[in-house]
Amino acid sequence: MNKGTTDYQMIHHGNNIKRLREILGVKQDVLVAVLNITQQSISKLEKKALISDEILEKVANVLGITVVAIKNYQDEIVVNIISNIFNDDSLLTIHQPKINQKIDKLIEMMEQLLKSEQEKNNLLEKILVEKQEV
View (cartoon, rainbow, N blue to C red):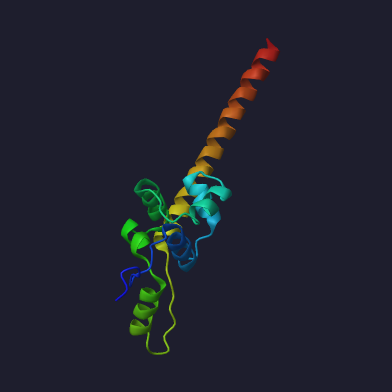
């Protein structure tokens, strides 16, 4: 056996995030919104071979998976698992309740923030009107 070769692929965290995100049907926009970073940052992140555990944890939480899943993801393993489980003509449906819950929570928080801002604006308008009347 040649000492210069290995029988495993180099782990690439960014590729793994991208593949898992795609499998789960999560757009980059979701990561942008939840993590409060730019689209370019997500693109750069998905190109990085090694990513800190802190960032992996944040991404894993958004995707509803574990950091271990990101670190150890391999297409070949997933294909083998799927072919072993779904060896008949079953259709594979991926459910993403955790992601949908997080998106719903984000929307709810944004709606509350918007309502709060509207109330604040109404109060400021009322104060301005009262000052003009004086």
